[in-house]
Image (tube, rainbow over all chains, first blue to last red; front, side):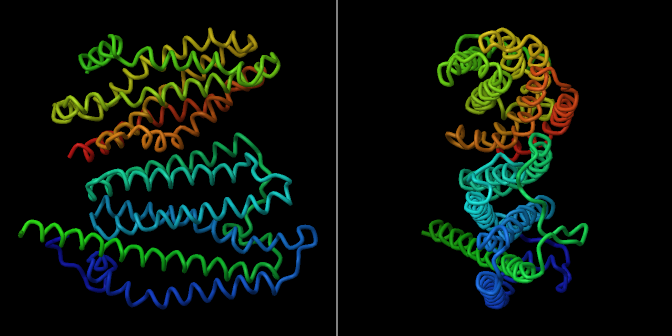
Length: 253
Length: 218
C-alpha cells in the first residue's frame, strides 16, 4: 500500500511492506521450523518414553502432550487473528489481513486436535467420548467460529472486501466467544479438570515429571504455529502477486 | 424511519412476504416433536421450554434469508445506504420490522403451543417473558449475519453457519430462564443476563451491521 508517511526502518510497521516481510520470512523460516520440530520431537519423545505412567490414569495421561498444547494454540491463534484483524481495519496493511487468513486453518486444526485427543482420553477416563461440559462446549463453539470465518473468506470474491468482512466477523465473534464461554459455565458445571498451567496464580496442577516435557511441547506447538503462519502468509502474498501479474498480462494482450 | 418501518411491515404482511413462513415452521416443529420423542407427558413437560426456544430460534433463522436479500436484489439497499438516514438507523428499523413480523407472533403463539407440549402452568409466564426478551436479540444478531452475507450468492447456508455460534449465549440464557421458571425455580439470574444481552446487542450490533453492509455494498 503506497503511503506518504515516513516509516522508521527499525519499526515493526516496516514489515507491513510485503517485500520486506517476504525477506524476513525467508530468513527466519528455516530457524523456526527447525526449532519447532526439534522441541516437539524431543518433548513428545520425552513425554511418551521418558515419563512414568500416572497412578490412576495409566498411560492415557500421555495424551496431555498433544491435548494441552493444541488447546493452548487454538485459543492463541484466534487471539492472533483478532490482533491482525484490528491492524488491518485500522492501518490497512495487507500483510496483516493475509496473516489472519493464514492463521485460521491452523487454528481450526489445533481446535480439532484438542477436541479429538480429548475425546480419546475421555472415553476410558470419563466413560464417554463427549460430555456437554463447559470447556468442551466452548471449544465446539470456537470450532464453529473458525469454520464460519474460513467459509466467509472463501465466499467473498473481492480480496479486500473479504478481508474487511472477516475482520469485523473476527471482532464480533471474539465478543460472542467470550460471552459464550461464561454462558456455558453458567449453564453446566463440568467434568473437565481445572487448567493445567494456571498462569495467573503461578501454581500448577501437573507433577514435575509431566510438567517439563509438557512445557517443551507447548513451546514447540507455539513455534510450529508461528512457522506455519509465516509460511502460509508468504504463500498468500505470492498468490496475490501471481494473480496481479496474470491480471496485468490479460490487460496488455 | 417510520415510513421505512411501515414499508417493511407492509411488504412482509402482503402475499409473498415472509410473514407466515416462520410461524408455520414454528408450528410444524412443535407439532412434530411429540411424534419424534414419544407422547410421554413427563418427558414432554421436561423438554417443553427448550423445544419452544429452539423452535423460535430456528424459525427466526429461517426468515433471516429474506431480511436484506430481497432489498439487495432490487437495489433498495443501495438507495438506503446513500439516503440521509444513517444506515445504522435503517438497519435497526429493519431488525425491528423483522422482530414485529416474526419474533412477536412467535412469542404470542408459543403460549398457546405450550399446551400441546404439556408445559406446566407456572412455565407459561416465563416462556413468554424469556422469548419476549430474547427474540429482539435474535433479530438484531440476525441482521448482522444477513448484512455480512448480503453480497454472497446463495449465502443462506453461510449465514446460518455464521449466525449459529452468535446465537448460543442468547439461547442458553433464554432457555435456562424458561426451564427454571417451568420447574418453579428462581429464574431471575438468567433472565437478567438475557435482558443484558438484548440491551447490549441492540445498542452495539447495528453499528457492526452497518459497517459490514457498507463494505459489502462498496
